[in-house]
Image (cartoon, rainbow, N blue to C red; front, side, top):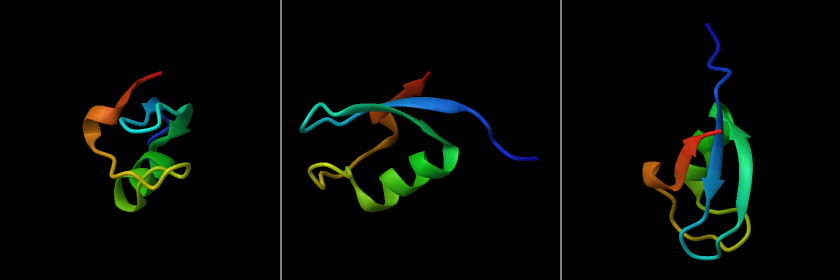
Length: 48
């Protein structure tokens, strides 16, 4: 079963905000913010 949950991401450093799906959420946690490169944790996401 595929996780189709959407999350609202808010970067703790640059405050960039976007809605992402589960694979994008995992990529952000692994790679950091796509805008500023800051480290991202679970706390940066909420259910959209």
